Length: 316
Ligand code: ASP
Image (cartoon, rainbow, N blue to C red; front, side):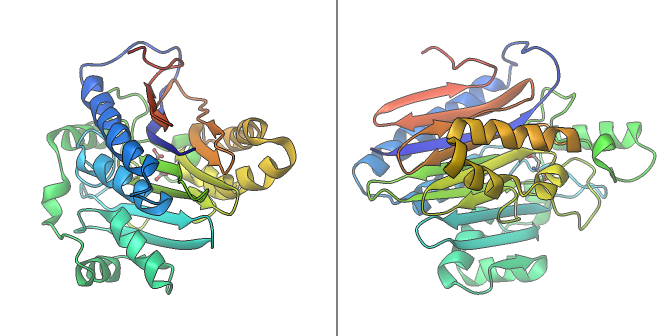
């Protein structure tokens, strides 16, 4: 059995209001990557690590998700990207923080994982490392889209102080703005019974320069071990304070996957971190819970692909 699950960010308040004009493009991105990579996972061409890397790269390429091209803009109106990846079988990990020129931050993180040391690189040395390992470099302005500039202007006009400094006040990249969803992540189970997880983000609109969310923190936004892989999305500070992704792994050994995932989201929520997560265990069980209005998500299990945004999966 193989599994590939992805998310494209969680957010919003109140009841699901149906698809926006931009949603078919996001859905198409998820469907096509699940279809292609799911088949390649099934025939053994891809292992879990490469499958999650390619899945996240495909979403980093989609400007309507908040990762790679189309990342949200920080307080200075510039993109700064975080990503991490973890391989379950040996708990190898790689993570990059605040990249500004690397087209695919998740690929840079994978190179760190494969190299083995160090695990994390922040700022320009992360971009330099990526460049040295053949990961495509772009002008900083290449990552900016009209949509993100418009969101940033809206943030700027509504906020007198630069950036949000506490969770209460934090401006999730997508909250209150139907056009701005998006951190991305993937988890996979391959034909060898191994799992991996990866997450990539531009963070939050108006974030202070240098702010680090949960996405590049191993154990907070991303986790994989011999039994489970997890990728989270939501207000990062609360996911850091609860070591959310790792916590799912710990609880799941005791109470099972579904209960563990709900338990952790319930711990995250009072800290101001409503969001969601995706997880798969080595038995092939998948969960995709979220406590927001929506979470872009999709899953491929043994030839069948399902994608959802609101509470239900889309019927195809
Ligand atoms: N977790 C991300 C961060 O805090 C944002 C998100 O998932 O939407 O940077």
